[in-house]
Amino acid sequence: MTVVLVVNSGSSSLKYQLIEMADETVLASGLIERIGEPMGMVTHRRGEDKIAREVEVPDHDVAFEAMLRNFKDFGPAMADAPPAAVGHRIVQGGRRFFGPTLVDDAVEQDIEELIPLAPLHNGANLAGLRSARRVFDGIPHIAVFDTAFHTTMSDAASYYALDREVAAKYRVRKYGAHGTSHKYVSEAAAKHLERPYDELRTVVLHIGNGASACAVDRGKSIETSMGMTPLEGLVMGTRTGDIDPAVLFHLHRKGGYSVDELDVLLNRQSGLLGLTGTNDVRDVTARAAAGDAQAELGLEVYVHRLRHYVGAYLVALSGADVIAWCGGVGENSAEVRKRTLAGMEWLGIELDAQRNEARGDGIREISTDASRVRVLVVPTDEEIEIARQTLDATGISAD
Ligand code: AMP
Image 1 (cartoon, rainbow, N blue to C red):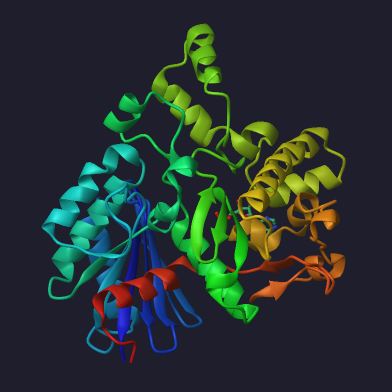
Image 2 (image 1 turned 60 degrees about the vertical axis):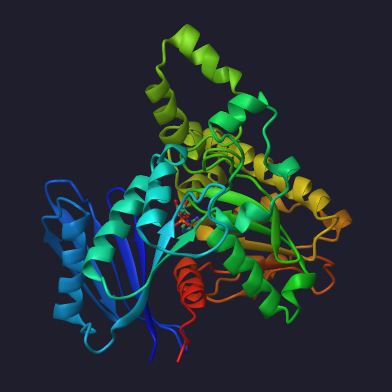
């Protein structure tokens, strides 16, 4: 039995999954939240059983100890399911990492040097990576980068029209994000349709609290909506997505906003939250249905941007075979899917109203039988994708 431990370390949280790779069964998973706060929260799931307890978790080292204690107390015991490798989610791989990478001290150093490009994420990813290497010191650790899938984008798609010396000096370009999910979902869609991955043109719409679109051309990302950072592109739960950069000059000059205040405003106080007062699409659609004009406008702005990117990516791909929805909103909001793809019959995109409304767990098709473009809901699974890439990179067999 080959087991992989997948670690997703954020600034205040640590998520983990222990996966048995032969049939990709999750043996246990857990979440350690509120790292660095006075009291942390630890949850651990094994099958139907779930435990939750409050524990002090001042830093990532202690978070890993809490994870190990969970395995010891609630199973499976590490001795019964020892991980053959650890896969780490790392947000920013810049132009240095093009695929899953075996971590050594030099790789750690490179990830550290990329922190300025993803200040909210890479530092936290690295803290988890360092703790994990201390705890599991005899096995390979593989870094799986969110940006790696997008390294196939052309320069034309990734350069900003910025002074090129400034851009080069500060490594400013589009790197994209959510790559692990875009890859998993586009591959799963091809498998579901029993079509070769390297023949399909797919628009993936990963719409959760963070959201991005990706044009996948025969297995390769050629365009994605997130930019140098995950702020660009679609309207998100709390992020503006695309905005005229001169708005920032205006707010600074006229409103006295500092750079840090603008960062908070655009990343945390905008998007659906800024437009409607809530970042939860369930609330926004319910309020819009009840006639709330503010919620209706928020939803319209949200959908307007989505349609903009769907149109752009259909052109980038010279037509698509598949549109695949994933993420908390993409997988669950029939209303957002319906509004986004409305009136696209002329493009060969026809949603089936009943299929779109029906709920379900696995991959499901929501287009009509006559629709030239197949529209699917594909629940994303970044952890499985990280585990697969981890195993690939180590060369260890799954069974
Ligand atoms: P994620 O970041 O992928 O976990 O997505 C979280 C977001 O999904 C939440 O903030 C909600 O806006 C949205 N969401 C979750 N469940 C539903 C649902 N049943 N209907 C509409 N939106 C949902």
